[in-house]
Image 1 (cartoon, rainbow, N blue to C red):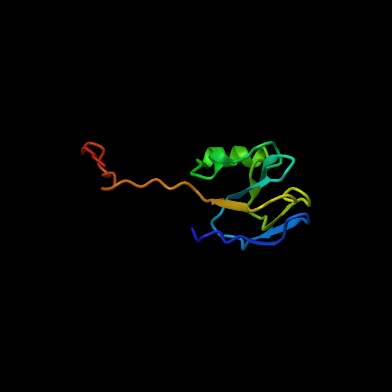
Image 2 (cartoon, helix red, strand yellow):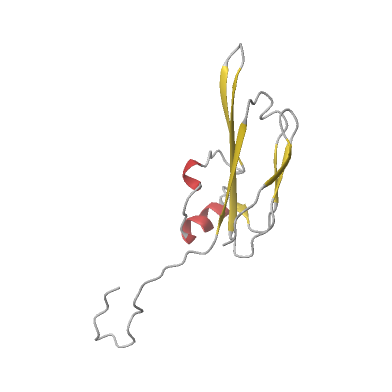
Length: 127
């Protein structure tokens, strides 16, 4: 699958608009961002995700099975493949002294084995 290239506009106290080109083999997307601030009043860490349910996404930035991708799409944890934009609301990173945005695209699971399974089931297969 090609690389997911995220572009952002805005930020800080303003809303951030995140865009990307649709990947033809993507089944779903997930974005998360985090920032820190350390002002005189308090030290703060803010975590945001593109999920419609409370999910920071720490475990989602890795392989996910087809079954889980389908389940999380239904639960609106992941963005559908048709989506190519997402907004981080204004003020989320208003105090940020730096922020990091990450994204992942999920494709279909592919399982490979070598040598191929023999057509004759009586022949031992040792992948």
